[in-house]
Length: 228
Image (cartoon, rainbow, N blue to C red; front, side, top):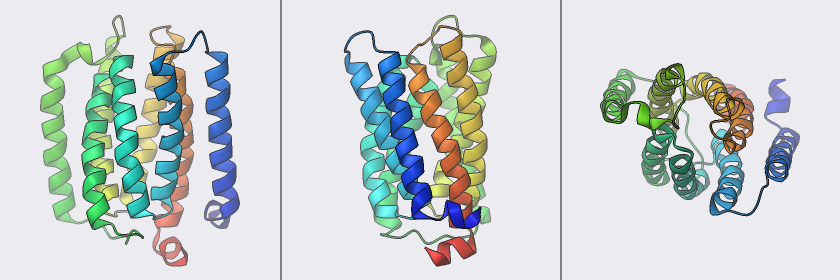
């Protein structure tokens, strides 16, 4: 399993399956061309390439694409009405700018230290304060309150995961596994409750992110990082 996750075959199969899933969901949900349809499609493809690059320790390349992808994701989530995610990708874009200058061509994996925990906590608290000003408006109208609380929790752990990832900590990918599972629940709920039909894009995309996070745990482990 470890060898397969680290192989070129996995990368090709994973990326191909992700693009195919996005194409199918675009065709199935097509009801006329719109800017949001186009930006969702492009943002989804970019998202796949970004997370795969980061999982494969390609820091500088992944960071450049990350800044571009954050722009698409911010626009898309704002129009979906998911303000917590829109705020998150603004933060994500800023961390990718930081990562471009600090990660280098290949990410050097490090252990999580006490400073990482402190900074993550402070950033998460700041994010919670910002979210409190938006209240239920961070979600589409008529969305159940439980989605709001789940979205807030997911926002906080993604803030921590992104910071740890951009500073080269393998523990970040364990957090991403949890965050991706929660996001799948959120997007699936928005879609199946008929609150946001376009959320199917991100439901599919987040499932692919989940698989990539599992792969990254193996690649970023000490033995995996050395072999890459």
